[in-house]
Image 1 (cartoon, rainbow, N blue to C red):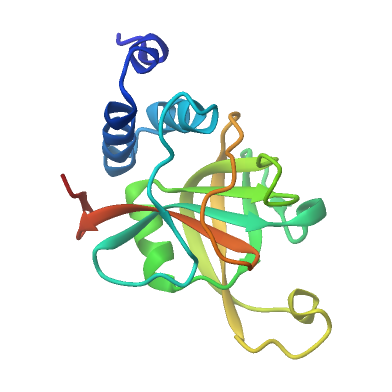
Image 2 (image 1 turned 180 degrees about the horizontal axis):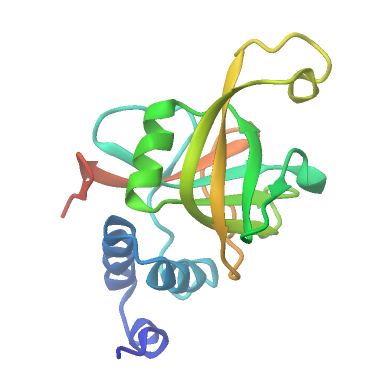
Amino acid sequence: MVDWSTRIAGMSRDQVKALRDNAVRLGNTEVLELCNAALSRGSATQPRVGSAGRSGRSATVAGFHFVCPQETGVIPNPDGTVWTGTWVVDSRHAERGARIGAYVALHTAKSEPSYVQGKIKDWRRVPRERQYAEGRPAKTPFGIDFLVELTAIPYEWQGDGSGEKGYAYIEADGDKPST
């Protein structure tokens, strides 16, 4: 069995990025978490990230980051998974994220590591509640709830922009990371 902690510690920044992209593509959550931990410690370069508004067929969201104070809308399940609450996310990103084993990370603030994080197992499209629009009618009537298999290693915030969400991207043709 490969000791990925030791292997990653000896890798260059570019090698860790490539390994992380492969881990996302192959759905290897253990290696993905180790790579993300190395990246967040600054021992490797940060993965390519973009704003929540980025679009295009070549961009695959490998990580969804949301500001979610006090676990708003988070629903624990008896099997140890959780529903993340409702987020405005394009269903194409949610579908692809579930297929490739992308992750979701909930943060109290962008400056804080995630307090809930895990691999996407499934998602559902649901009506948004007024609580998510601060009591006003929601501009976007439907959102996405992610079903997440919890993991232990917190993520640092990824993505830019001024909103409540950030996406960590991998460049891909379909679901294959580009080289």
